[in-house]
Amino acid sequence: MAVVSQPKRAPGGFPVVGVVGGGQLARMMQGPAVELGVQLSVLAESDTAAAALVVPSSPVGEHTDYEAIRAFAEHCDVVTFDHEHVPPDVLEALEADGVPLHPTRAALHFAQDKLAMRDRLSALGIACPRWARATSAEEVTAFGDAVGWPIVAKTPRGGYDGKGVAMASSADDLADWIGRIGEPGPLEGGLLLEEKVDFVRELAVLLARSPSGQAAAWPVVETVQTDGVCTEVLAPAPRLDADLASVATEAALRIAGELGVTGVLAVEMFEVRSARGGDSSYVVNELAMRPHNSGHWSMDGAVTGQFEQHLRAVLDLPLGDPRPRAPWTVMANVLGGDYEHLYPAYRHIMARDPGAKVHVYGKDVRPGRKIGHVNVSAADLGDARERAGHAADYLRGVITE
Image (cartoon, rainbow, N blue to C red; front, side, top):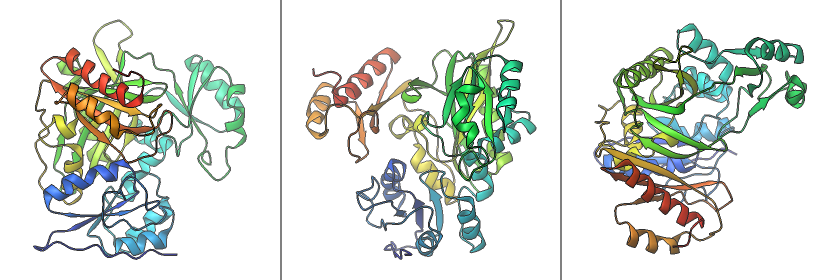
């Protein structure tokens, strides 16, 4: 059944921004929306979704339900997304209705389909790992023999936070996925194969681009991964060569322009050494066309945080200043652990470190689930890492003092 919701409009002609998806990204847009004077409306999965707990206009509807999104969009001036999983046919129907989508269906295609992304970036001359599309075990074997085993296999659609990614030492390791190639779903168009990149570390370039073409980028950051999940972000990336930072940022801005991205774009990269042991370079790993975990540090560590900037961009407002407020800001993700109730831990964290900024997502605690993050800014990187890590570990129950 279609959901009809009419958010209250603020006096003065301020617009309503609709967000499809009620997760933590939509939730964290609410504060900046209030500060900008715009209204937020969220199509949430349930009335207890993270964003529904803080956004008054949060009708319940599925992101796969065209009629629900259509009824929701009727009361919004622009529509953006908490995730990239709205089906392409639904996006196409919305655009046919004249709904302003940011990012557009054409741009989102390259975030939704990793094979399309690899093909487009390669055509643009953007550095990528060696890759191939495979539709059979024989093609998997041929690719692995050509680039060297093990290889990385990815489902072209639907993967995130390490899901939909597998390391393979032979085609036999991928037998289940190979058996589903061609079936409706994430493997309908084949399997994405990539060489296993011997990288120095993982980097991310975050930027925002408006429909009129203005773009602004934050400093390149280092992302620290644990079991395929980002656990820490260091902003800016320490000891990063200035030339590499410039080249990586230029590549990300070019990707945004060539793909027509509107809103925030995260370009996840690997820093790699040249074969001759010389200067470092990069290869692009993933794209995300929405606010991103690698940019959470900017909420407290930059003049303009990513959630405010995303709203500015999708409304085609002049973009804000992305420069950092402090020499270093560290973001530590809070993953679900032993504590079901997080609020009692606040007193300890606030008393120990008044400068720590704790952001929780209003989610039930489950082991390994992202339920919040902590930002700490400081003049010393080691100090910021220790403080952010302590707060995150205390909330998780890893430490008790």
